[in-house]
Length: 250
Image: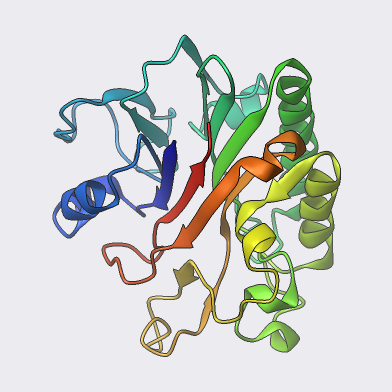
């Protein structure tokens, strides 16, 4: 089964750029998007053969997630059961029978000004995933807004006090992995460098590949041996992020 994930940084804008060609090119069974930044009825996405599940959130033009799936789910839920975060449309969970599939847009700590809120999120989201994992294996993807290790960004030495690479955020990501989850890309490519999923719009960052790897596919530890491919589609344009994919032997 093939999965894809893409922070589109505004789906209406991305639809005018490269979303549908990229969607068709990747040809995933399940395609998750984050930061749709729209409300119901503001755009039509023609994904014939795919069921669409949306979590818009209450604040217009902010956050939001969606999943396009041609594998019919047994059911789905929106959010993690914490009102503070659920109002922002950050999580969609699909029950696919053998596994749970989770699409997430993790809150940014905004120059560390919102770090306390971010750490609260990390606790609640980790507990949510652990509870799912007790029931059956989990595949979770999305924009986690953290570069986990120095290898995951171009200039680690100058970013230790930056949002997304603070010690606290990186430690919480480690805690999530230690709770029984596998970073699928690093499982296959433990020493790969220059592998980034986000580039700042300014300073020709993407042209110079001055980026960060902050978009991930994680799986429950017991799915580790079923990981057959994990890609970063850096050639696909249309957002300040690029899509990432995962193929599992399930």
